[in-house]
Length: 156
Image 1 (tube, one colour):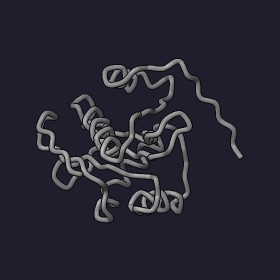
Image 2 (cartoon, one colour):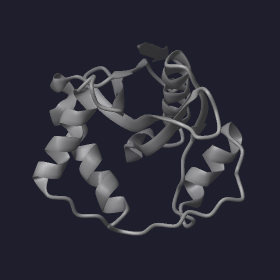
Image 3 (cartoon, helix red, strand yellow):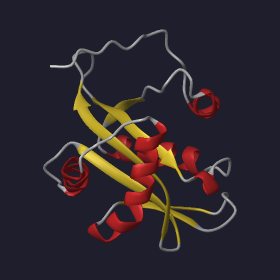
């Protein structure tokens, strides 16, 4: 899937990541981890990228590019639901380079994930964000409905 978008101040293309995108994606991935104050070993980063390119895995990676420059990315996971016949899609990671923020890149990535999920038979796209990330929430409130659910986590 390739989505072209001229509404972000230049020609932007969103597509599934390829091995050729890894070097350009990596600085954004690291900036994303820094934003959330997370440290991952390089082997986890390599594994994440490899899984996203493996058709046998449920993890997918889209990259937004202007020319050869990756300006944003989204990872998403397709999964079955106990409440529906159709698939659900979880938007796991969304990040836009600082220079690309406020230009519609994040919105375009969400739209691209939604379209990819729709093509795979999903009836719902959902995600979570940090409650302090009010900038992202301002975008999310324009493109989705905020729910009353609270996330709980238990490390195993």
